[in-house]
Image (tube, rainbow, N blue to C red; front, side, top):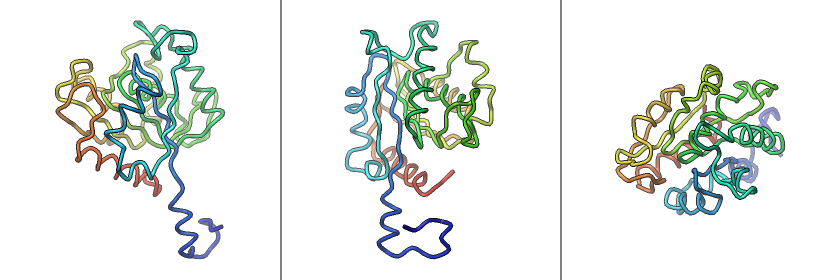
Length: 219
């Protein structure tokens, strides 16, 4: 098998094998969501596009669902510690190239970014490692408990896409822009739908292009 250190150019069959390697993207649902809900919500964005061939999307339920609850946290960020510990455990067991989040899941994605080791070498203080993030209808946590995460500026120096609606009745575009501003060189995509994961051709193409770039090692 070819490797970058092998000192030779890969043949056609080996190049095909290299290009077939998929990104692993962790997908985080919204407040009243679940794996099945998010999978259905993401279909307009992914079906029939190059995104589905570039990445494996790994859908997970919030730990609250196993206890008959819902959401990643409730008002006042009650339940955040449970979600934080669950995320650390998940990343300890599996590796992910990127994280995709919708609504509250997008807000969680930003908090996970604040826990990210910029160089990929995880520590107790920065226990997560991933290379990029995609957030739809996201918002920034205003909890004092999360101020330290947002202060970890190097952790937010990663490629990011922020998709927001001009007519979102749940998360205002101003809130989504405030979140995007926490990231270095954010890619901002707008649509005219509501509180949804959009499937417009422009956004589908932009996301597919972003994932293709990440699959080629973009940063």
